[in-house]
View 1 (cartoon, one colour):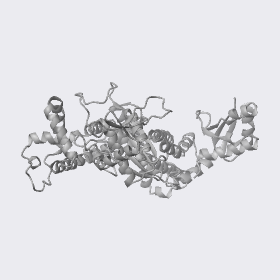
View 2 (tube, helix red, strand yellow):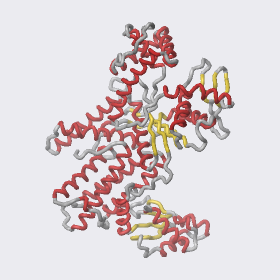
View 3 (tube, one colour):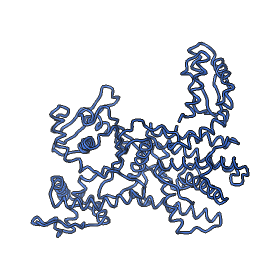
View 4 (tube, one colour):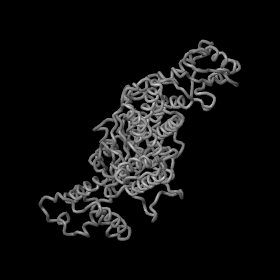
Amino acid sequence: MKKVLDSITEVLSQAFVQCGYEEKYGKVGLSNRPDLCEYQCNGAMAAAKAYKKAPVQIADEVAAVLKNHPLFEEIVSVKPGFINIKICGEFLKNQLQKMAADGKFGCQIEQKPKKIIVDYGGANVAKPLHVGHLRSAVIGESIKRIKRFFGNQVIGDVHLGDWGLQMGLIIEELHDRQPDLVYFDPNYQGEYPKEPPLTISEMEEIYPAASIRSKEDAAFAERAHKATFRLQNGDPAYMALWKHIMSVSKADLKKNYDRLHVNFDLWKGESDAQPYIPDMIEDMIARNVAYESQGAIVVDVALDTDAKEMPPCLIRKSDGASLYATSDLATLVEREKLYQPEEYIYVTDKRQELYFTQVFRTAKKAGIVKESTSMNFIGFGTVNGKDGKPYKTREGGVMRLENLISEIDEAVYLKMEENARKKEVSLEREEAEQIVPAVGLSALKYGDLSNQPSKDYIFDVDKFTSFEGNTGPYILYTIVRIKSILNKYTKQGKNPEEATVFYKPNSESEKALMLTLVRFSDAAEAAYREIAPNKICQYIYDLSNDFNHFYHETKIIDEKEKEKQEGWIALLKLVKQVLECGIDLLGFSAPDKM
């Protein structure tokens, strides 16, 4: 399906050629003055220099050639040389007809789909998810969905932190609290219990206590390091304990990710990469990719084109210990062995950009990843409170993610209660409990995704949960409003499914809605190319605004002319489908009522 911009550009390009100019000057864009026109061509300004003519003269010539073209309602030249365009309603109606028949609403799907791995979890086992994990999960999930929408095979990996010192800390703290457990009996020979020796609540209390203790008690810290070493070297008792910690922690992580509608295809962690590390480092040394520096093993990754100093990538410490880079490189070895993706996308804190530049360059220099493989780092900013500092609890502690979700849900419930009072209707608690999680999730995700990923933003509960303005609840309210209209249409004894033929626009607000609707593919493709979910947010907000303007000016249900009403119903259905597609790409859905 050809886009509106492409169709107009094609016609303008032909007109420039007809007038004796190169076709490249016929490029058309959206008007930045919608009060004057819908689309605009500035090619005459550039052509004027090449052909040594006044730009308005060139614009006059092109506009005159196209004066009676059926694509345009109006095409005029204006000083100093712009060509202002309004397209005709018949063309717009036909474009919507094609869009409605296209399963992807006019988006160009990849002819050669790629296999893509999105690394966007980064949770640490044995630690609860907190506000710092929000952006990675929310942005990563949306990127995964957008990439899939365009036909790619996308694999989402949580990439757990499951092999570090926190394991040794938990094991030693548990040892002191429950010394009689069989895992701590050096003479024990039987099978280890199938039931875990601790709950998620106990684990979440044990780890912080052990972490604080390790900073105050050098002997305990040393024990934790030794326990970590024993675990990483395959001690059967500690491996059995580790598996229990993993199963308990993963169940809790899945529960919280489920509340966010975030789903991973892989639940792999740092531990999965460990078997690949020895051979990987040995190979890099043998091929002179890595070398010894002050007892450590490093890889030079600086390029002549670097504007800033680029330190070497450290892959093994002088004491023989591995680092995060070692694990991430070994993870790439495993991913290449199992999946051979054409593209990687890592979603993490923007402060890690230098680190990932080192890892990506090392991976390509070592031949772990092909030179042609695309490796993208999507760095995100922090979630801040109104004071501009990282978002905290009222007591000043780190905000747990489940508490943040509950805080948003409570604010949504209070807003719904307030709205019910204004309308003098009762809010049924049971009904509210079904609606609130969906609206709360829209507030949380849209509040995050409407920002550019790299930007910090203020987490404003009142603003995010508002049913007005650029918010998730406003988008959902628009969808629910359309559902309500379609229900009323059904109650008139009519079938919305039979309304499939679009009608020419009858008003400025209807045409504005149609013009925004046909821009979906442009917005979606921009979000896809730029890996920028905020482009989807801006588009569905614009579409919701234009729909609500049209709705307030149009008596859809009371319309007596059958064809016109059916045309409006067809329009409403397409707006609803596109909005639902948009919010699905962002990772949330709309309830039937609000």
